[in-house]
Amino acid sequence: MLRLFWVLLLKLSLVHSARPSVSPLDQEPSKPLKTDRIAIIGGGVSGLTAAFRLEQLGYEGVTLYEQEDRFGGKVYSYDYNGHVYEVGAIWAERDHDVLMELATAFNFSLVPDPGIMLVRSGNGTDFNYNQVPSAILSEMILKYPSWSKVADKYGYLTEPEGFFYANDPDLFLNFDEFAEQNDIEVYASYFRPFWIGCGYGYYETTPAMYVLKLALQVAGGILGGGTPEPQFNSQLLIAPEGFQTLFVDVGESLKDARLNSKVTSIQRTKQGNATRIQVDVDGVTEVYDYLILTSNLRDALDYLDASEEEVELFTQVQSYDLLVQLTKTTTPTEWPTTVFFNQYGTPNTSGHVVGIRNGIVDDNIWSSGQINQQNASLEQMDVLHRKDFVAAGLSPVETVKQVSWNYFPHVDGKSLASGFYPKIDALQGNQNTFYLGSVLGFETVMGTADFANTLILKKFSS
Image (cartoon, rainbow, N blue to C red; front, side, top):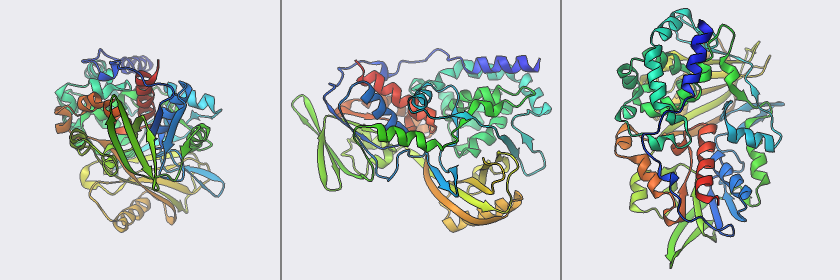
């Protein structure tokens, strides 16, 4: 009975329901020529996926600009004392065709996470994500019809351009309100530690659309693999060599991918039926026929000759700082372990450690994440970090690495209701400019890569 319940839930969560509308991505304008010059701004997952696919399609003049000295964006693997630690993306979902294609092309190994995943609540009700507590499982079975209705109705959100189909006002509610309205509080409660522990913020301030996309994508693990045997981590893949290695390989395979290249200005001018795109980098100007922006759209306003409509839309994008640290402690782990702290799952606990991970047996380096939505200083964040580590039974000795990410770009419910995504989608191709990135696909490797791949195939393939 238990196994049958989860099998049914997994199958249902993976069903894509009928789309409520048609994405403008489906429209087919005239395609660029294979000899056209294309500038891609950003060497993260979106930019690298786009450049890789364009070269596969036969485009000869693709140039990628990355302002940092490395490829990968928020996929960042840090070498320390002979081990590799992730200070960016940790996991990939198993059902990810684009990532698997890249891994195969570059002989890159992805394996199921062998570790355990724990939830601590601060009141003694800790549990293992791999083993659904009986009380929670009973409530989930009771509320299964409500969850199945939600999964069936909104399954389309898991598609690469799923956000562009969404026009149901319920999706623009914050997720707490959505869960109550749809009678799925037990599912929301069970998913909350994973959502917050991965750094995505809080149900109280996040539109339901975003939470549902991730919840439905990983439903095979967190909501659909809870058989008596551990199942959750078998749905999540890790990279023993370091996740970034794959994207370094992709970047280095490209014909013209430039590191340490900060774009300072982009000017787009119409010349007859053509569009001339001037890209200025380090005082050098180059001219292109097409432009692909993959960085945070709001950040693009610093260098782009944005139209009034672009300014109006890009300024609606919001994000926050996610502080990731590698900390040496006096406590080595006996088994690869991830811990999510559920007691820090509300906005008034901003700054506290929401998750820690040690993926190496007998190692004493722990990674951690802290959501900073209240503009706390680094010193204030460090105080909370030490306090939370001590409370978790870990004695911090030394900070090995700190990285602050501009994380989870998204828009609020008001912007969604006013048509943010359809308006962005309608702009795709105007002035020979296309937009990619995590605000359009979602802040996961899968979300950004799949959206980039989908757009390139629809707009640039013959």
